[in-house]
Length: 185
Image: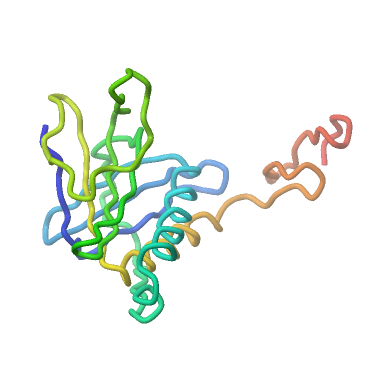
């Protein structure tokens, strides 16, 4: 199945749905009436946001600080219907167009040696994927990419507080803390 491309999207956000400790995380790209919703893990959202910010710092240089940041604070489009679950996220910089390129796929690719690869995509990847796979490719201008990175950070902040002793997440009823010899805190 060919990849769905958003170049650039009207909106591209990361957000979560559900109570703390039971949240489901989503990426959502919107262009006109086309809405693509991809579910992913919390850690993927954190790494993607950090990766985009780092990529902008390294590649965009002065342009990243001079272009206004475009932060989308709106909610996810509803109804939220998952198109696929992201198994692999790739991140690249298109030097010619000065865009951040993000690709989410429902499969993990293999490199020539047969090992799973997590390297970034070609800045202008071929949108033809193997039959049966789903992917979305989003190209973001610098200001929109910086806003997306900030939105990823905001999506992460709504979770459970961490235990001051072990750093693990605290449930409303406490948790069994390994640093307190298994006593519930």
